[in-house]
Length: 202
Ligand SMILES: [Zn+2]
Image (cartoon, rainbow, N blue to C red; front, side, top):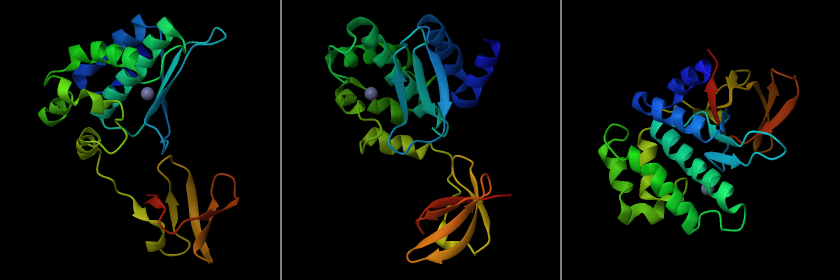
């Protein structure tokens, strides 16, 4: 448990660590940090077959997205406990649950002003789609760590690089519009789009 607490420090803002930890303990959910998924920031799985209910969050969210996505998924958990799948995923019940969960966090202790504004009740209907093209999403992106990625097509052949999830490759030759790259993990070749965002290994 102490280890979990320490882990939270890596991802959440200083002041959020304690209340987030309490929520995890009180609601008996398991928090898992995963690699980046392009289609979602996090997800929730009910605890079926004796497993803990599980909330997963992408590792590379900024601290504010971490907190908002965590609360978003925790609201799914509360709705599941009460209604199972009898109500719609982002329906009235979920919105009410989220509002309650967010309430104690709506201060400058936890969020900068520009994010807080987006969380005011009049903007709340937009919040459900935090990963979509909303003002909130746009503002959150401002707080993402500087992205040092470069495009695969701009690096010389034979260069070693890695992907956001840490897998390492070597850029080989071209095949039609794409590049062949060899995985350093399993030695197999993969086809890459020239516009793939990669990171240079150091
Ligand atoms: Zn959702």
